[in-house]
Image (cartoon, rainbow, N blue to C red; front, side, top):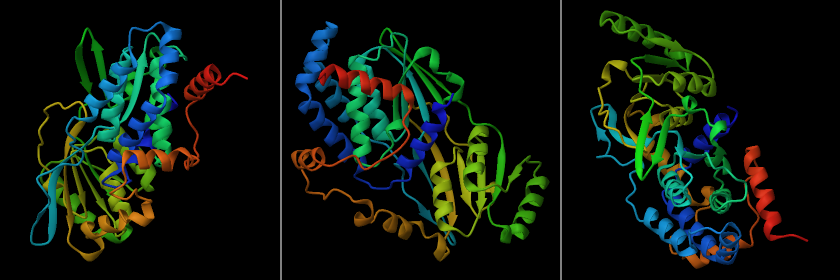
Length: 352
């Protein structure tokens, strides 16, 4: 399934953007675009003879938007003698939701934006001209305005979604929700990103062997290593590196329950397996050396000028005025299904 590659890249773009106001700004902008397109929605509702009203759409959006956020929430990192450690909630990854109900589509698109998961809607009653796809266009073009990949959200025909390639499958049937999540494996992995740590890694290997712990070692480039490790979904992984940027990206993008920087896998813990449809718990640990002071790195990474943040006092109306007349900044390859959807709906409203 080629779309998985696009979803993985979209997940990376969204989760490496550390603007703390990003989700709120995106959803505020979407709210203004929904209202601005009321006439178009009512036209397509009339064409489709739908029993869903525009007010139903707004109500579903507002309800989903009012739900509490948990993205990266934790009890806070704890500082030890020579390290930071802590647990926090992180997005599951690529989630597919099976539903034909447009109100469910809205709910899970909002959930995806708030949690920074990618959301793919799988529909047995797929049609290029539909309320769901009208919603899709508004949402993904809004994402692009904030330099987040359009591929973060998708709608595909049921037969084009291969469930085994997703991190989670959500089935909605008769108002009941069924969740199937991929399990984390018993794998332990060492990622040797910098050969100057060979001595420390030899010591780590000896310790693991003494405890009877099986492990694998990877030495690939970061993107290749992440792809391999995320396929395995290990219980614990440790990266050895001197590169602060690589360590930061690795912590955010690797799918493992325990993630350590230059630290032994013996620090891993058995974390709660309680199912949450959007998040799992990740334990992290990294040393206090200057090059790994992530609190300072976070400040640098979220510099408002670098990220072109919207000022805190900007209102919804201000956002709408700013964005309407600006071209979309993000240029990317979008999945071919979306191209067809966009063309069909544009032709519906803008016939010459």
